Image 1 (tube, rainbow, N blue to C red):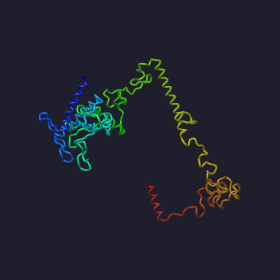
Image 2 (tube, rainbow, N blue to C red):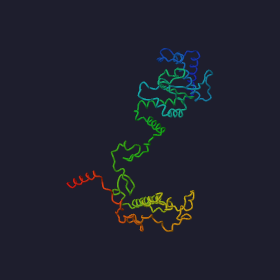
Image 3 (tube, helix red, strand yellow):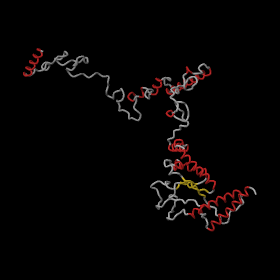
Image 4 (cartoon, rainbow, N blue to C red):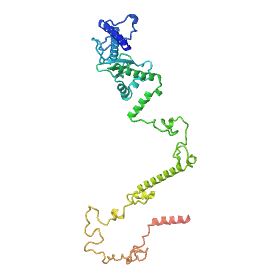
Length: 402
């Protein structure tokens, strides 16, 4: 017999034994082969859900499912027993050591930012992963009927459900690897934690790409200047005009005597001068007085290019949309019947030349012929009262004493 035939024969015998135990109800092994009983769990109806019979019956059914899958892989033409019912879903549990490591957020590592890590795991494995047990539901959140969520009375665990054993095994391995890494590696060195924080920053729009960031101190990638492990470099900001590299000046350049590098430096300088001239000419505009700063500023003023005709008070004609002036207004010609070229109006009698240096032909009133003169009777002011004269004399005598 070949190796496959031997394995198929052993599977056939074991399936017959399991089928017989399930049919007769003899699922509990002898006392010496029993494992320690786990803590009791109760369902929503108050009945115990993990009795000895339930646990061993489920264990036999799971074993039969695995044997049937293995036999069908070895021989595709093989048919399972008649009383066998293929389960629609295969389940498995991975326990999370939340009590042993209370400082580690296993749920956050498994779920990831906005559930993306868990969705990625389900996509890669093809299995459905749910986190159940104590601590899986936030405080204050419960079912509408007030009952416990499925598996909430158990310890914290991951429930993996799939339609094949391979998918379940693959999901179990990935979850166990995540838990083992979180428990053995410090949080600052956990690669999964770092990637999740980076993804969360990208989702929130606060990501700073430090991986492609060039350090301003050493010129390396992956860190910033304040996180640079090297000593402070004061020449990193110096750019050589010959080789166009950083860290030294042209006098210390190793290529300062190389004609090829010198020609490239001259071409760069010429290109910069050309770009500067072009930029200044664009600022000055057409006919703006050249590319100098004065010409650019002069042409940029909105009132500099306007002539005298643009000023409203120097306009010779009426403004657009305005009413025309009445006849004789708005021009130098007088209205009809009024001539500006006739003889001037004569002044009143005695008012000719009233003001000193005034219009010629004007004479002062009688008695006011000379500047400062007074007419008879109202030329000089009246004398002050007697009391004022006494006070004035006293004041004058006092001033003379002083």
